[in-house]
Amino acid sequence: MSAAQLAIDGGVPVRSRAYPSWPVFGEREELALATALRSGAWGIGGRSIPEFERAWATFQGAKHAVAVASGTAALELCLWAAGVELGDEVILPAYTFVATATAVMARGAVPVFADVDPDTLLIDSRSAESSVTERTRGIVAVHVAGCPADLDALRAVARRHRLALVEDAAQAHGAAWRGRRVGAIGDVGSFSFQATKNLNCGEGGAVVTDDAGLAEAVWSLHNVGRRRQGGEPILGGNARMTEFQAALLLAQLERLPEQMERRHRNAGYLRKRLAAIPGIRPASADARVTEHAWHLFMFRYDADAFGGLPRADFIRALQAEGIPCTPGYAPLHRSIPLQEEVARVLHSLGRARIPTEAHAPAHLPAAEQAGRDAVWLFQYMLLGDEADMEDVAEAVSKIGRARVGGT
Ligand SMILES: *Cc1c(COP(=O)(O)O)cnc(C)c1O
Image (tube, rainbow, N blue to C red; front, side, top):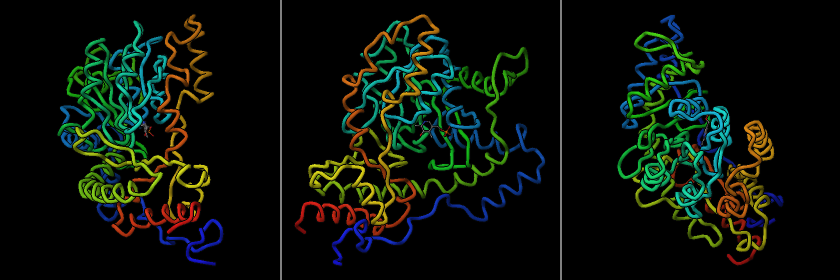
């Protein structure tokens, strides 16, 4: 058995230590939760909820924030407050988490998939614009991996066609486009504080906006239609956050700036090391991205440079070397349950099919390709040190050497 033998073939793995564990917490969080408990105000009316809303609005550079139950609820509330209604079309990237589409469908609207930019894997504004019809009501810009989408181009498209621009910033805590943090650069934006996200309280979300009217609408809609200033209620749902979630978020938020810095430093190093390996191409960021949140580190894998080793086998080999990784999203236009639901909605609306050809794979070549060749690493790995990044590069190189020979 030589050192060069892959772990998956019985060799010694590059790495046997775990990457930093997630979440990161300590006495600060224990105290926050105990204080929330003893206050007896566990739901709306507790002190931490408005305090977190102010802190989060300030952190993202938005005028208003409303804390809610989840990222999915936050996105649905954005669309609801922006006036998305039954039968409207909403454009979103095909390469995103399924919740982006289900939030649209929860409003009775029809998701229309746009392609992504092949280098950034983020929504392509030209593809989005070509999907606009007279029924289009909004565009959802998803900052996948924590990298801001081209908000200048998307704002221009939204303005030209009088559409709402919603930011799905579920992965983009602290990310910035041309020096401004994301969320409220479009009309309204959503965040997730689900357990795997870069700011986490188990489950949770927030809506941010600079528009006072939208903020009031979101607040009412998330609190069964009650009016913050009193008065006749409107029709709403329940997407309230608890005091425990807000207390935990306030404590976790104190850790975020240092974690962001660490992820930034490590991702920069890892990007350089991986880009130098033939057949590996890290996703790029637009030059106008001034802060990347690094929820994910995404790279493209070219099997040809690894002796034809299929991506699934590359991923298994990399995992066996001690490097956590996954293949990431399958593009949403390929999801059969989603397609069936879209067909049901269209049928109930008396429409034969989507009026654009946006669901045809030929129109979404970059999303298709990303679904085939992307590999993802996770944010918590970027909380390690340079040696932890070096192990990723070494494991990838080792697989390359084993499959194509050389050193
Ligand atoms: C996590 C995520 C969501 C949903 O957030 P939840 O808090 O899990 O409901 C939505 N969109 C994207 C892009 C996400 O990554």
